[in-house]
Length: 171
Ligand SMILES: C[S@@+](CC[C@H](N)C(=O)[O-])C[C@H]1O[C@@H](n2cnc3c(N)ncnc32)[C@H](O)[C@@H]1O
Image (cartoon, rainbow, N blue to C red; front, side, top):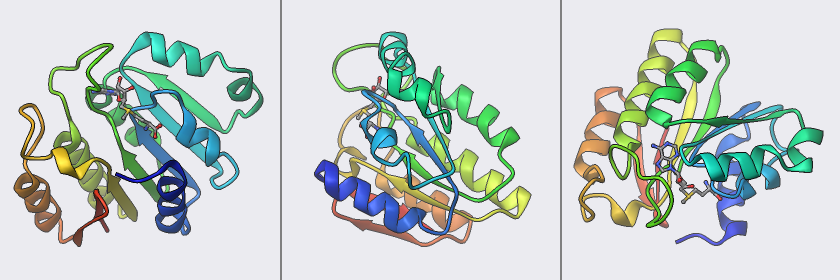
């Protein structure tokens, strides 16, 4: 499990070529807040309305209009984001049930999200890097996709799949 600083450092490293950062699973919004000056636009999606409202109403968000907090299930909201996204981006997939709050149809939609992103990238000829957090749960917890499924998706789209420090990196 990465520390806050390690997480942000990793995203900066992979996100360096890109102006856009997209996150699924906002929680307290700490990752977008820390990265506000690293990207021109940041989008973050949260399923739990109470969590979303707390983040969206923060003075920080009102002052930093390059961050767009969105409410809803990432499997429904991400396709909308991708439909208007016409530049390459780094994605941080971190939407999953955390044992409290609203529970989605599946505990981790990471495979659905990854497939949407890789399809969008291929169809639009746009580059992307996808980082998927909490790799230790994949294939262990019910409701989470297997590591094999995620790796298969990456390979189907001719992508590199690397697992290191609890984060899957699809590039
Ligand atoms: C581990 S936390 C995210 C942490 C945050 N990315 C950060 O770096 O601070 C996971 C969040 O994903 C949310 N979540 C769960 N399922 C989701 C879904 N299908 N779509 C969007 N968000 C979801 C949870 O409500 C929770 O707030």
